[in-house]
Image (cartoon, rainbow, N blue to C red; front, side, top):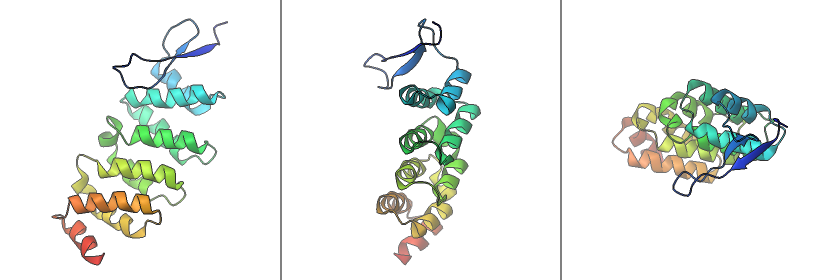
Length: 169
């Protein structure tokens, strides 16, 4: 039956993320992976598809990851995985505005905001977003997220917005 799915582990020298493949051994297309990440009823397959989207450096993949992160109907563990994928290269530096906007979203669970904050603190052009990062640091209620943001602000102490926020602490 062509609808059966199995997950094949990658070689140890590759990112340790299972790669979903069809029962016939053929790889899913990027469009199929995006669809699986959003709609699969199999949580293991859905997780594998989300992890596979880490390697899909496309606006379409970033859009799916963003949708999963903000969708309250998506199980939290899958939202966390989507946030991890969006907060790491290649997605992180391709969508800094989206990461910063997600960080300010009060409806995200703390575990999801932690992953988003980790990505924001590692942005290549973090200085361009320092006012938003520093401002969010003052509003953040989760101590782990706040610490991540504080570390980012502290590492950018020469930035005027960072300096103001540090002086206020």
